[in-house]
Length: 258
Image (cartoon, rainbow, N blue to C red; front, side):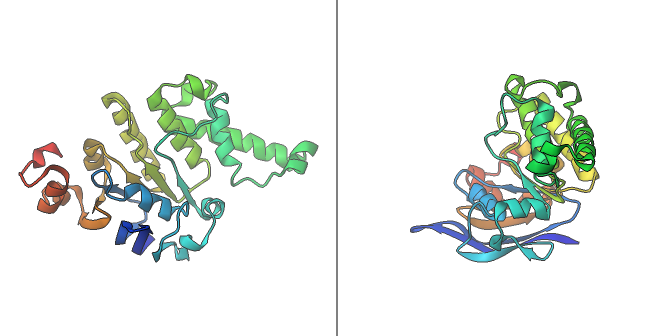
């Protein structure tokens, strides 16, 4: 089943076309990567997919609904979550509290009901706390639940942001440079977490520079260069595509770099 349909998305900034008529599909249950050299339009495309920016042309359909007409908080409620290239955590809150903050985007409890401690709000809060701890275990942070976010190493902060996004109960998770700044051990932990998330039925789209991670976890890859899609397919095809090699590293055959 096609979960996400990107059709002819174009975004211009003055005389610069950052994303140029890009189209691709994301099928349910897959991990799909979007890669490209610096300035290829990846971040702009990601912002369009999640309505942080609006396209000049084209559409983004999630399960048939056009995301380009929706506000970001409604996109979250529709089942789409994202992380950002720079981690944006609540530094003084614990890891568990950060995940709970994500859960509040989809819980029913409002200010008045919470203040009155209605029985159903107490039950919902208890269930949310149990789910937060489960998500922390899922990404490998179970033992860090009570640790303030500010005290977590960089790699664990990345995983915490993913757990918080998962607390919104998404069907589609978009990750913006999740491996940025990670060492090899942290990147391996991230790859295992992505597999576990995918196996739970969450579809993943990831923008990433780490080609080792991309080639390991992706089912399909979209390659952008100067705003245009220049290739799409499984990793074994992409890493041998002459156009992709030229875009990244010049005309020489340097496929061993991927």
